[in-house]
Image 1 (cartoon, rainbow, N blue to C red):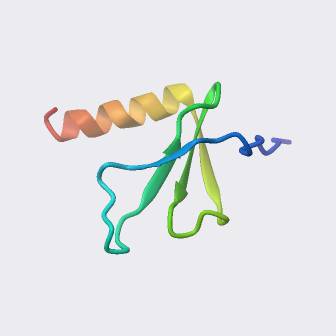
Image 2 (image 1 turned 90 degrees about the horizontal axis):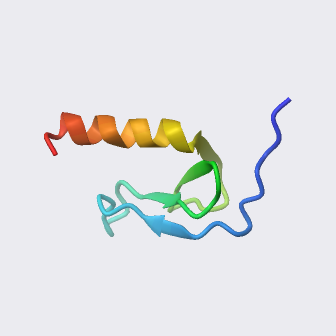
Image 3 (image 1 turned 90 degrees about the vertical axis):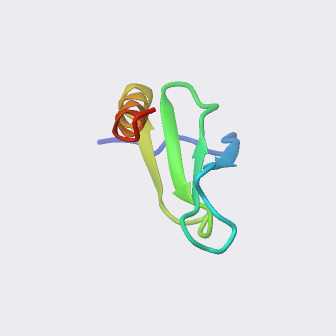
Length: 69
């Protein structure tokens, strides 16, 4: 059974692709060892997705490759 990580020390930052018009608003906390939590900035008390560091890195690398970066 998985346990929920303690996110009380998470330092959240909004994605540079988020906008201020209430549209796509993703926040990421990358200061926690081994995990990268992701949440909707419009609902900070709502659910949080938790990714292992390696999975998050692979996801970002895939996005950059698709975007031709």
